[in-house]
Length: 419
Image 1 (cartoon, rainbow, N blue to C red):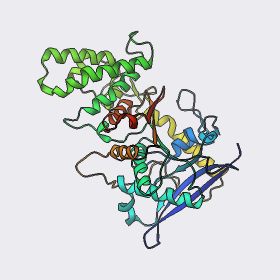
Image 2: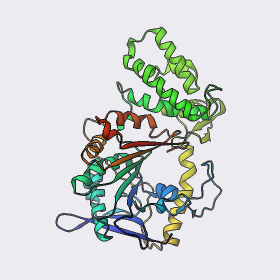
Image 3: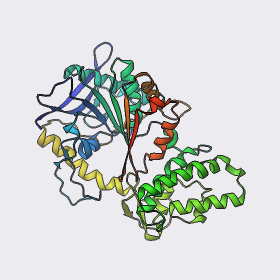
């Protein structure tokens, strides 16, 4: 395919015309394509505070980081390789770095409060896309957004923000994305977090051969665990301290069978085994910890005691290859010349979230689905993702208050993968 790559900073201006932020993006546009038929997908990672090198060098762009097939750390040095699975065969792609990340920069430090926050971030991306459509003359193209991780919060809110700004999307792709932190951040009385992570933890236990011969595939363990969560685990957690000792013992036994850890540990955790406890406990007897972004990967620990590991082996396996690849690619292939340092993760603090509640944009997404009958949503879920678990996504969608027709425009795809 013949395409043109654009590496550019697009300015965001105040009402008075002053430049407040320059957002960096790399756009891949097919040459000689009909703009009215060729889709454009605006893609980004999450954080908040993450640049979009992970989607850029991991999935969507024409080149990718040279990872081993099993996701483990390859031997350096690293050189980008052709990406046979790039999205460019069916859509133009715009990889966007959020303000304060990658090569995106605020004009002044005092503007942080205007750009760093759930709603502020959505407003910035809305303005960027509006400006990009004008610069590249693509107002008449089919439009999509794709967000990973916190990009699910951003993408869900952005879908509605764009619609309210007069820009109707054809669809939103959530890649291991969350649109409601209720499913991720535990607190006393919120048991949704535990039910969200359970099937993904069971998948990881199965992968590491901790469940015996009970399950034949990752699909079967996740399906049976989801059924158990709905019928047994969630109702048991909802009862709290009113569970009898016998009832609690039975649930702990079943929990142990799904997680591959001892019944005594499950009882000691009051039936609430967090994902962070699970990282260490699953393979503690081997002196290993499992990854957060990909529970298949393991790291060696100095000690066989303690609740916290020394790091995330899945993060450590990708950081160096991706960092080297994006910098090499931008400088050598695209000819970017700048004194700026490419920030994998920028300082976007203080990040402003809604007071007194979890960050959530599922309401925004629900409104978009309800009001735009041509809008579709695809959730891409990794079985071994212990950062944004698949059951949390399912829970969120099931509580969006959608009718049957609206739900029919939501679909899921599951992968033997991590985050």
